[in-house]
Image (cartoon, rainbow, N blue to C red):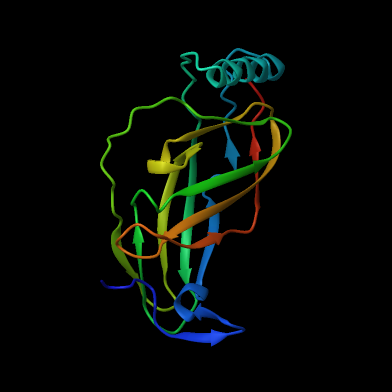
Length: 192
């Protein structure tokens, strides 16, 4: 079986370190640093309370229809900082990204959505030395297939957000290295 992104492994302190894994860097880019307020006509306190009530019902097993997550214009940029090309798998069920919002109004919900039972293997993508591969993120949602966790920013103001991206180790679906971005600041607009 072909082993992805394993170029040269050296023995270091009793363990293996793979050079290819260490030459990948994740950057979260907000093409727009503002996110529209998605509470509609509700003031922020009402909006937060309504989402919290839905989350509580869902945790009890009740059927809940969460509002659609807000649209965003983010990109996850995986950069090959090394001198050799690197091949990774992207888009499979193991290759998931997560967004971590820090701020007073940040909430997360796990909607009960139907997924097909098939296991999706990612497609191989080669990132040339010094180049990037970009993954668009267009909704406040993440996890498996970009849809297993919905995020809500219920209060206008600034939020710190960072991202992780789970690499697959090989075609068999084993997890590889977890890439982490530095946080950036975004702003949720005030209700209109």
